[in-house]
Length: 200
Ligand SMILES: C[S@@+](CC[C@H](N)C(=O)[O-])C[C@H]1O[C@@H](n2cnc3c(N)ncnc32)[C@H](O)[C@@H]1O
Image (cartoon, rainbow, N blue to C red; front, top):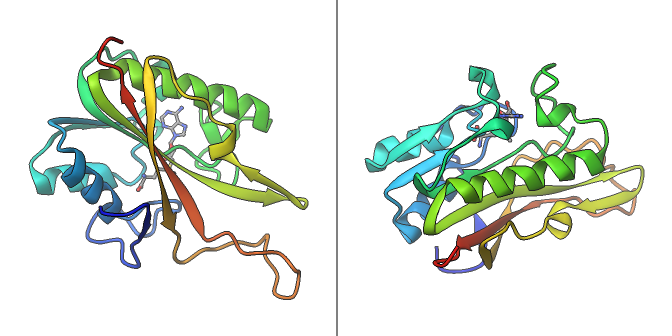
């Protein structure tokens, strides 16, 4: 990972390509090569892309999802990991289940942001000092209003924001876009990276 824009046309042999909203394992692999963590947490693992990459690289990991009955908003890890990869639903753009604990079922964007902020705080708590938290998040447009989630997220406590990476999106299925509409198709996601303070 050498620059702040990344593009992975292929997703690699990780996770499941039929799972909507899965990410390329190459992104996770590059982050792990760069930051060299020893123990990884993914509390919203979806089709287990992070698990598959960690298994390939021989990195200790805990990868869980609401699909296994694990509610990330109730997680209670304390300084057990040195890398957390957080890839939440982009609010209700893709609905993952009918479970009321599912972040894709939160009624308003304001409530969603509060829960996302709580998730960032819990993820930071799960990190050892000096560990890294990565949030992969996207933008969306509804009724002509553009929402940039990266703009709405605040730094979690005891951390420094150290990097943003723009990830080019491939195979975008956006029904909010019509040719000739004058709108610009959203073809990127944000990778936000914080480091837990050493005196945190
Ligand atoms: C964008 S997907 C993650 C995709 C994953 N990175 C992959 O490559 O397959 C978001 C995931 O968050 C999960 N999720 C939603 N609310 C949750 C909660 N409260 N606790 C744990 N997982 C949750 C959904 O089940 C879904 O699998």
